[in-house]
Length: 240
Ligand code: ZN
Image 1 (cartoon, rainbow, N blue to C red):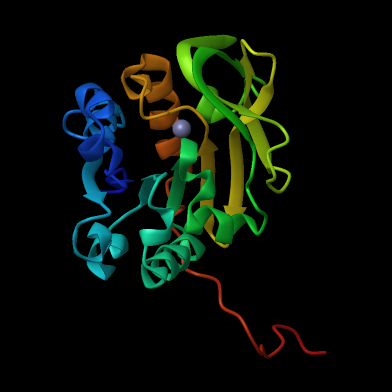
Image 2: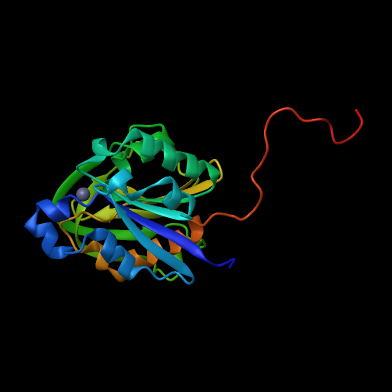
């Protein structure tokens, strides 16, 4: 089926186990909350976590994944470099990757961006207002001019990322900072979307607008079906 989309939601999954506060908000993990809230026609959704063998990202699982979501924070360094290479290779081949919140410091995102991906932060639980700055973009479908999250962690500029190919969302925080919250890239044949909200101590992944953005991003990041390009020496197509 052409519209069949295999989505894998990867979560570090440590905060939920180690913190009662986080465990109370996400008793089955953030990955399960996101899986329950995604609305993508024809999608088959599975989850994977850090503490599974091969972090749940075996060659078979990745070969069968069209779009991978990534949430990590406290254990970025525990992600095996071999698995990072495996994910990177699949992105180059066309697998979509959606990097969520503190995934900005994940090995895979830093490798794909080539910059520090550093930013300002403050986890005081302040209001975030997220503005759509690219209203024609498919990731903004069904989203108003802006939406608000009553309590979130602040991420502030400067965000040390390459200039996004397309910028879809910009956040304003009650404390005064702003941030590029929805950034699109392509690397190889793969599409990458970074989406800012999702601090573990707030119920962000139950918010309908957040889930709508993620659902739109999954559709946008889906691979384009075509033969892979070829490289290297070529005989001329015409007589020269
Ligand atoms: Zn956070």
